[in-house]
Length: 170
Image 1 (cartoon, rainbow, N blue to C red):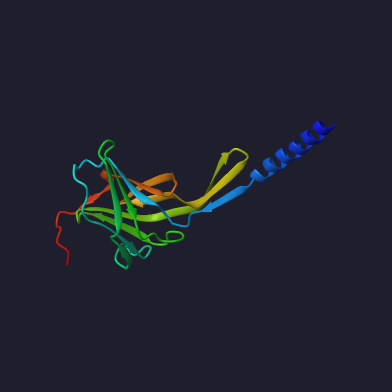
Image 2: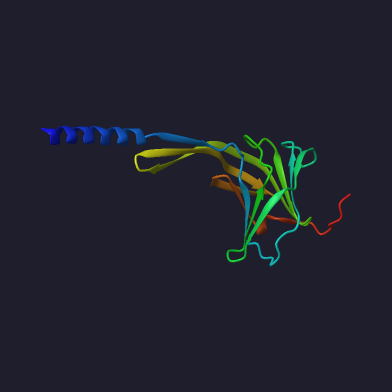
């Protein structure tokens, strides 16, 4: 009889532990995007200057609202990829047009930004984690429409860049 009491007690404890592990966790990311990923980066050099300017929507990039030049720059020579991560991240949805300028000569004018709130569910053991974030569904980059769900990274291609020959600013 002693053995069956211990078996019952262990069984009850096992199920209590199992039930207590089945908790859902929610991770909310409020940044509109995490980084810019530029593919087909053919230069052997890492950029020295990156500026992100925000403009009022539909102002044809004439009414500037904000500017950020504080970026972490990661250059992947193996894949010819450049990752630009703003260190001063905004909160919420993108409600402006964006102009990304690299070394005063490559310009990406990003407009018509369509975003949505998205969730990814990751399961592990008996628990689940919900990652809730802003997803970028479509953008217009220098007249090129890019669609498809991007999970926090704005994907650009070198072929989309405008090249500005005059590097002097007024």
